[in-house]
Length: 151
Image (cartoon, rainbow, N blue to C red; front, side, top):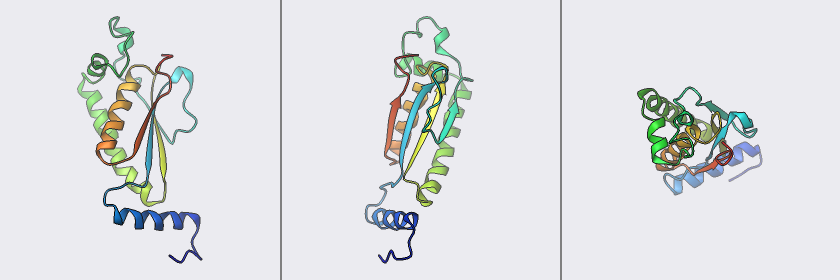
């Protein structure tokens, strides 16, 4: 590859193109998913932030309060409404549309933050679903629950 006239972005695209051609579905862009609580602040490194405080809050159900979005009972509660399921679908549709565009433009990482009030229930359940769906779509996706133990 003659890189004489390449910017760093041109070089990255050329390398990504050559690498992905050889390895099929390997993705060049890494996706970091962060769940967080708005009451502790929005993650500064987030490229996109989604507010989940419109979803039903398990905190107000006494038996669910001590649990987290990792627990099946909380997950089922969060996604019990058609609206929550539709939001998850639309968010995944948006990401599956945007990520290849970002990748083609030379982005090599993106951080997506999903937040609720305390960062323990709704955002954790959504983040768990998102990372699983992205991994199934062959994206290298990492997950961080920023405020799970605080919320």
